Amino acid sequence: MARVLAHRTAEVCSMGMVSLVPSTLVFYRLIYASEPTLAAAICRPTLLAVCFALFALWYDTHTINPERNTFRVLGVLCGALLVTSAAAAHPGRAIQEWVKLVAICSIAFMLCRPLRDRSVSRALGIAMVLSSIVLAGMIIWTYVRYMGFVIPTYPAIRVLKGTALDDDNIALNPLGFECVFTFLCGLCLIRANKFLWGTGALLLVISSVLTGSRAPLAVFLVSVIAMLLLNGLRSRSQLVRASAVLGTIGITAGAVLGIAIASPQTLSRLTEGRWDLWSVAFHKFEMHPLWGNGYLSVLDDPTFLPGGYHSEYLTALAEQGLIGFAAVIYVFVSLLRRCCDMALNSRSRHPNGQILLFACLFLMFRALVELPGLFGTAQGPADFLAYIFLAIAMTRTPAMEPRFVLSETRASPISLAILRPTARGEAVSGEQVY
Image (cartoon, rainbow, N blue to C red):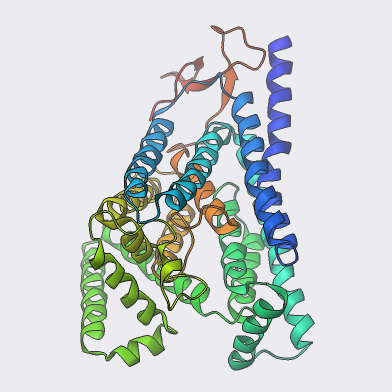
């Protein structure tokens, strides 16, 4: 009885603590405009402390393969970027940024174990959805404060975005992404219904229309198309598979041909100036192709603009060279493979697999045109959200949420083990089978 009580106590404490994770990110946004240094100083230590406490509560749980895979993926990333940071033009600055990467990777890894519990993961999902609504409220408040109750127009919103950033240090671009992606992370952990789908659609409209950025809507549409094609490629119908193959070839060929024949001015206009920044990033890569130029080397550019190169992939290529770029791509590919298995593989399908796959595609396509994310400054809400999603996706079970029972072999008051079903449907203590 004492063990059961200790287990339930640990579960309840974890549900309360895990809700602090998205709350901390919202608090960061609330105070960032007036106290950016304080926001950064509070956010990382708070998340580290909360995640360490959660990990301590569940430390006596059996390690499962997804946790090992997560540790391997994050270890490869940190190891590769340590090498490139040591060879950077400014190694002191690069190592300092690398330490931030280790901290955010630690947060992701420590979240993996408590998120295997159904109640804890559900509590995080609900907190994420509520946090996304608060972020949407911040966007609406900013719009009404500057524009009043008028119908938005794109030119006016673009002016609003610049004014809010210059006058009050309110960055609407990342705020829009955080609103949408926080909701997606929450939706991965709870059962979706019509109300949640309607809420998500409203959040997407708010993040796209009221922030002056077309990126959320464009990334959303591209992610939908990519998801339809991936599902079509795995369809049992030959006609659907053939259509998906032709669609994939046609879209790829059209994109390549369009880039090849379009003038740089046209590409710059279509990408809202990002094409010029991407050209600078590729030029920086050509200077040191193997090791890169080191973290934050974009600050050394005479034409430096806030937001850097506006692409995680090209930023990794310019700052970390081929070695670091390969590690970053390894993280993205591992995450995509995991999500594809849960969405498309009948033997390892997850109830929320399609949502997980869509969120992964959304994160990957956004990385083409924005920064930060899985590779960035490792200190803002967008960075933390990306690694929280990595922890969510890498530790989902294929057919059901994992359940915890008390271990009969350990004496810890919060000792836990994974429940494994037997052939007769009975439950025995042991490691989860994947």
